[in-house]
Image (cartoon, rainbow, N blue to C red):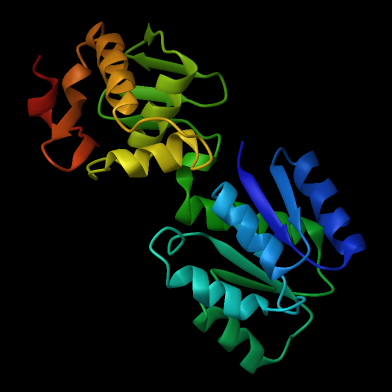
Length: 233
C-alpha cells in the first residue's frame, strides 16, 4: 500500500482528496502547513506528496525546492495541486522539482490517474503489479514469490525486502537505504539486522536455486542481479 502525504490547508479539499485516495487503496496522511509537512516527511518518508502552493508560512514551491536539495528527499515524487494556473506558475512549480502540476478546480479521477502515473515512473515498488526478474516472479497482490511455478515461502519482512530489490535490480543499496525504504525511517533497528534478513531471504531462495541473485557488494551493500552467472548455484 502506497503512502501519500497530502499537504493542503483547506480542510474540505484535504478531506475530499483523502476520501478518494483511501477508497482507491492508498494510505493517507494530511498536513495543513509546510511545517507539518516537513514533520511528516521526517517521520516517515512517503511514496508521494500532493502539495499545495499557498500554505501557511513557507510556500509549497519553496518546500519542493528544499526537498529536491536534500539527499534523503531528492527523489521524493511530488505533485503540485494549486489554484495558480498561469503558465509562469506551472513553469515555476515544475522547475522547483514537482513531477506533475494539477490546477484547481480539479477532477479527483484525473488526480488519481496522475498519482498512479508518477508512481509508475518514480516508485514502481509501491504498485501492486507483478514483478519478474530473471526466473523469479513476485506478485504483491497475492504476496507470492515463485520460480517456474515453484513457490518460495517468505516472511513479511523478507517479502518486502525482495520486492524492493526486484523493483530496483542491478543497483547497489546500502544498509541505510534499505532500512529507510523497506523498514521505514521511523523504525529504529541496527543496520546489521538487515544482514540477518538478507541471510533468511537467501536461505529461502536457495530452495529454487536463486540465492546467488542477492549479491553482497563489499563496503557498499546489497544488489539483486539477473545475470546468468548468479544463477549457476
